[in-house]
Image 1: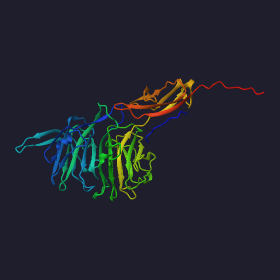
Image 2: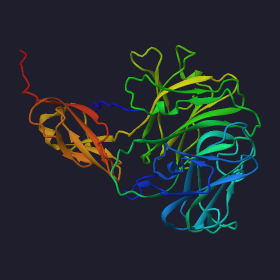
Image 3: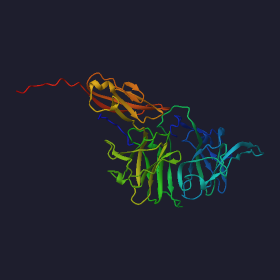
Image 4: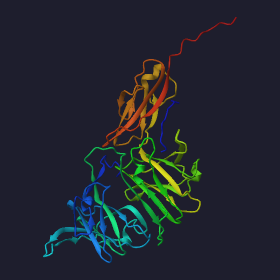
Length: 446
């Protein structure tokens, strides 16, 4: 068989007809007071936020409006922070889609109001908000109480004050639409983090995620990290969700550089309570990947002491991955997350000579009939082939090298995905070409 030298990693929405999805943000905001830095909730920067400050037993509302009316049936996403404090306790958050945002003048200045578009969404039906604190996204499709979807101009977010000093951050609202740009398809777009409890009305002062964005900063030396801590909190989960710019292709992998400061030598068996959950939007891609999964591979980072690289091939397409630590008996209490990144899957190759499965070495007489082919090529990718000097030698899903002399040859292949600004990492393969056998030497025995 041909010797293939493989450099494999273990292991926003799928390339549907080669069209990506990208975010379109609400660009107009209005409010009637009680909001700090209101423009930051409509600036298209998902890392900046306004702050809603609710008076005791009162409420404050901020309106986020799109530049045009959004078609009925379009999901909308709002990023916000659930006020910290008691988990599992209602916080008075309401999200109401609207149309016809208007200002009504009055003697004392006037106020903003809008027409409700369908039903409102409150603590009881806001996904992920019932029992957690931290930065979160809420995605829903505006509709009436009986189900039909409705068109809308934007969303109004209201915070009711049920305790003194109640406040929350509101980052942005967005919808997804077909992309018209070319970008880094594995770029990290955002990070969410926080704490969840199993509907328990208990304080969570010992569970936290510190410096979450350190896990996705540009730090090739791995000197900065996010710290996930479960502390003494039982039945709570700390999480860090990394959101990528676009959806992966099935078979792409996730790579996490991590360290446990309390255990010098880490292995998969010690990762009790640690798991990885891929998502495509709000839909989970498979079950959580735990330390018993065959998808996981853990290796010590060379020269690092006790920093490890954890990799997992993800069978389905995903655009985000949630890293979790559960506060259960026997679980790890702390973890440093240095880096979270995504890697494209390498193409699988087949090798034929004269249309039949090839063997290594190949006789020089048959070298012109060798053919390397990408098995199950991606429909939205172009493949490029390179020689040992990294010079492009061909393109397409199949490749016939030009061989004129015996020897050992190395080539590589890489996929360039539609809409991406780069070519994926190369997969190398090596094969040997033998000279034509010489004439046999004969001797006559007396």
